[in-house]
Amino acid sequence: MHNNVLFTEADKEYFIRMMLPQIRDHSKAFEEEEERELHKLLRSLENKQNTQLVIVGAGSLSYIEVAFTYNMSYIAVEPLINLYLQKQIRFIVGLHNKIILIDRALGTFHKKRLGTSKNILAFIFNVLAYIPTPEKIINQYIKKNDIIFIVSWNIENCESLCLKKKYFGALNACAPLCDTLKITNKAIANFKLDDFDLSALKYCSTYKRIKNKITDILIIYC
Image (cartoon, rainbow, N blue to C red; front, side, top):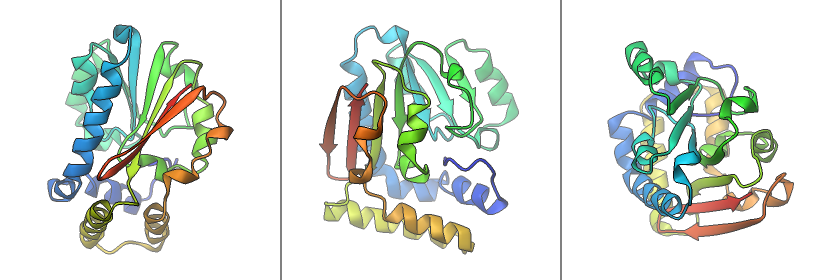
């Protein structure tokens, strides 16, 4: 669920920890808002059957059911997918012609793997905060008419900040963090969606900002 090319055991343990039910309980309100806004976006699209939902930091196939609700193809970009999904599940998924699994971090594989269809490039659950120079990475993959969907914490809302504190408190309490992850964790905690530089994108015809109680969402139309 992050953009590092090489993973230490501490990296892997940290991101697997995010998938634990007791940790995800703290992010339920975030995910509910995120899913609601994703549905709104997808419902507004024309020609859905020729559009792909690309989930960056897909974990164990986040929002695959949403993509199929709208008869869309689904691409999971998740460097730890082989840890999140057993090989038997990956085998079955691989038989489906509307599902693609990419076990690499964004920025480390060729853009051809995302195909030529219109893509909804979705950076769910604050994953953009884990990507260094995200504008540069995104430019490697976007095409004219693609849509970028970015979700982060609403740092202007007290309820969101309280939930964020509880979430990271629970995440970090599972086990001591190594020094590298402490640095990463601090950077994530200080991430602001305002810092994303729209002018650096190769394509950006218009955009929309949605601030909910918990989430801050940026939708960019390329």
